[in-house]
Image 1: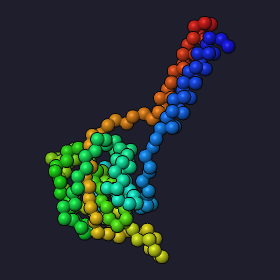
Image 2: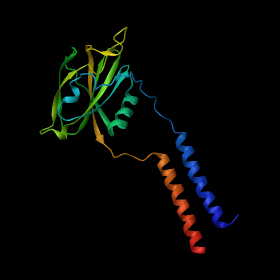
Image 3: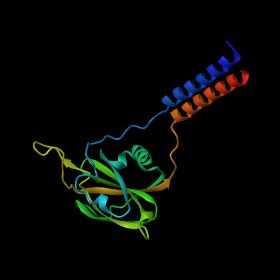
Image 4: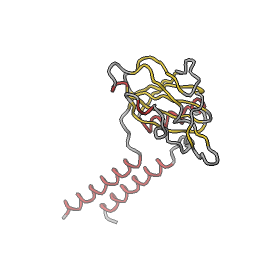
Length: 198
């Protein structure tokens, strides 16, 4: 085996090792999706100023799935270093108004109603002066599943509302991206050496 071939094979081995190492990395358990679209069923949450998007509806209680909710928020909107606060403040009906300290950046509101919760993201920077209150409804959280009314939305009473604020971080390339880049650089190096010798 020539020196060039050995160099090329070493590059491939390194790239393959990087892919295998990334595959063995621990992952968070995924949230369980209820198959309910939180912004397509009549909810007014998506029409508010500064609205960015929604995620959910997810089964269970956001307060009992802190790590997974944080991962979901990071994946969906790039927020990290989350600070959580309860913003329920006496609200318990299927609609009302949530008030909180003025938000001038991206933040997420979790609404928990029935056996599910939804995550709604807003950008306070898109609204002059920021956002300090949101008129909510729980139509994007719960549904009635029964004969003739399969997945029909209805407003369940709010259990609690949480506000997640943090720092928006730029997307970090997946480990597979680095492995492909290394393999590509190895190939380029091999081709360059081969041309130089010719």
